[in-house]
Length: 444
Image (cartoon, rainbow, N blue to C red; front, side, top):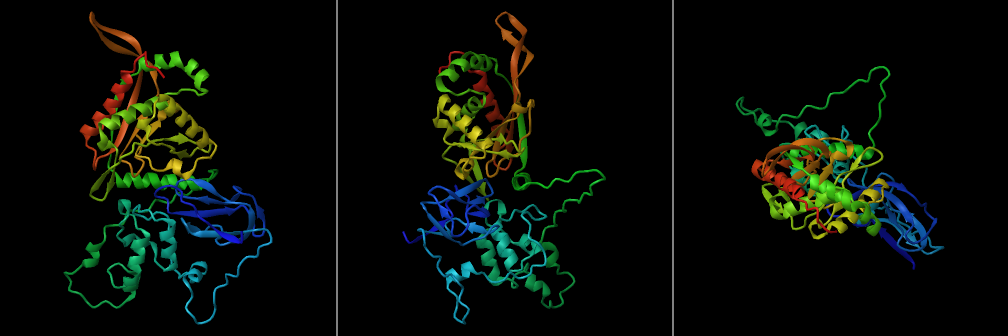
């Protein structure tokens, strides 16, 4: 080979860019096929870009901290003894080529304020949008005033690029704010009605003597942003039901030993819960939807996310794809594999994207119930509580009796924009009915 460009690979649907965390290899250093070259991070997961074949890393085209688009060249790989090409930007008066413009952008204009990941109103801004804003001198207040066409009103790359040519001609540009304004009639107050009141910023807290200040890691910051965005986006409603899962518990106790011996896998309650949720979704598909402005998108596939706690204390949601097409053995293997690799930090971006509904098992931590926050852009999430022995009233042909039963709570949070109480309540009740009707003769 002479030399090849190494491109930032596609990393799952909805992932369009990544941040370069750290180069693992230096220029001029030999690399083996599939050996990691660079560590990258997206809004969903950290991963590595491997070398496609043996060779020499000739040149790194991006630096640590750069935000790179999917499909963009990040490095040049050549055979041993290859020389890096001269990619110097022309300094004469000729117009630079598009490639030169990409490798040597114009100096950033002073914006006067740092553009944060989320504004005072809770709007989220992607790294690409923030970079464009800072290079063009657009401050946070001006960026907040832009109308976004992305999901949930998010400002996209196209929105900010469309805004730049007309900047100063509109009512919310920074240039216009500094231009002379002719006197207006006292009754005309467009500036007061053009913008909604800004949300109050978070109060600053001064640590007391002896307090320890711990900076959030990158994943915790992303989780915080995502949770705040979800609460701002969706009016949450939560419905609860209590389920008698005695037969299910007794059945699992009966088969778990033989199952582990036969399959080499432990069978937990999580795949059973996912199976029940997937069955209920097939019966009530309007739970398996997403909202785009005033449109409702009915998802064809049933992809169930399962919230998993990491050793760091953070949370990640790997996705069981097409959960309705898997039998209990397949679900068990998928759940165990995803949970294991999540704890090891070995999930790929594809494996944590594309979910259409989420399940979180708060019973793992001994919690009786919870009120989970919706994992956007989904519209519903279910929490399963701890299974506990409780006295319960049973109806028998000879009268009511009190017996010790295995009981659990199911909590169902849903987006009241598109899921009303009737559907949200019926759905969680249906999942409980499926679990309560579990047969002791179920074969796996």
